Amino acid sequence: MIYVTLFYEFFKIGLFAIGGGLVTVPFLFDLAEIYPWFTTKDLADMIAISESTPGPLGVNMATFAGFKAAGISGAIIATLGLVSPSVIIIMLISKILKKFRNNIWVDSLLSGIRPAVIALILFAGWEVAKLAIIDWKTGLIFASFWLAIHFYKRSPIFYIIISAGIGIIFQL
Image (cartoon, rainbow, N blue to C red; front, top):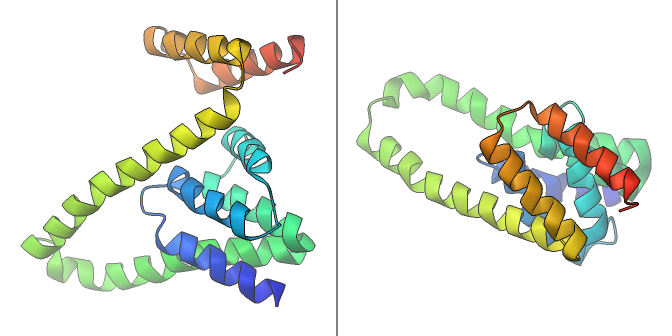
């Protein structure tokens, strides 16, 4: 039964994850409240690890959550559940996109979805910030990196390595 639940829950997330992996975060917060698969603290760790490992954020998070819930087979089922809607939708869209490419209704639909995706990403960022900024030290680190990223355009790898070093030095 756990496999059906994992597939179903991650299929729903995959169905509405328009805009990328960060859009899955609000759905994962809901899962953390409903199921004992992971906590919100685990979710913050999952986001950090998923952002620093190869592969899409949502897939990495589904794999991790599935593994925590039901081992390797759970990881496979949750990942399949997450990616299945995308595969199905892309197959359908590729068949009909040429026919409706310049359709005003399709264009309006996509224009309406964009602000919702931005809202979901902002919500995810806010929720992650509430978990990550827990005291004045983490707030100072956040502000410092925000300014550094804004003014000094470096590779994200540079900032990940520097922040990992800071975390180790200050035992965060």
